Length: 166
Image (cartoon, rainbow, N blue to C red; front, side, top):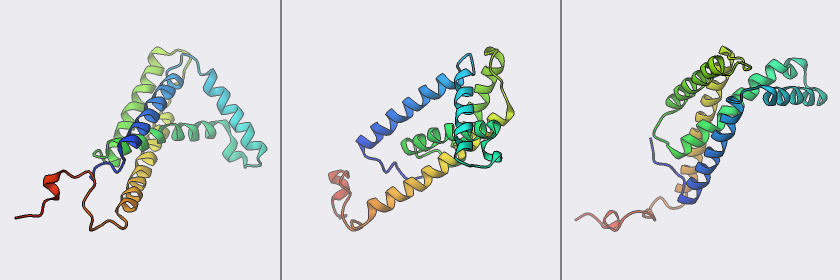
């Protein structure tokens, strides 16, 4: 896998966004009560219904599944941009393991929460989507970065790398 196409500032911003998202997700997933997530699910379901979407898309169970997918997309997307070495398969496997562990904690330690297999599947799907989006973003960034300077030396290359062979 190629090195990260991000510069130092972009890497710092992506890392900050990833840390913020992990903290937010941990608070939501490991909260002792599901009142906050339930509130969001029902209000979003209602809002989607008022927009005229069909019942099949606005049912609270489907909205919850969609939110579970969406919640894990940034983890793999941002993580893959920071650490491009793991493949999309690796990020998907990490998503499965993390989601499984979250559900175990919810089942064993958080009595007011419900652990479900469907959440593990949705969260893992979110990691897969995020990892595949990262592949696309990296490809676009690398393609954009190589336009018009294919014959120019790398700006970050050391002096030894820039010397012609003898």
